[in-house]
Length: 109
Image (cartoon, rainbow, N blue to C red; front, top):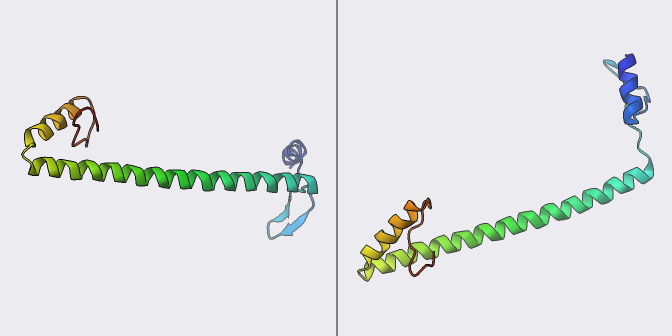
């Protein structure tokens, strides 16, 4: 118990003696100015989280769009008889460690 009081002293927790089934439980006492500071920080973090989620969603949509364009371009090239170009570039992309790259014509992915 003495060690617990030392930890409470270091962390700034005061023992207010809340009665529970297991006995007395320390409960933190927070000053009003600390509470306002914490609320402000929480609001900042919520804004950051919203921004990162939106950015992530936008980037995923752009990636899906680019991948879809590549697949459509590969289909068009095959229809036009450019199968050799598509396969050659696909092999080059895999040789460079790029997986899933289907079309790379004229240096554009």
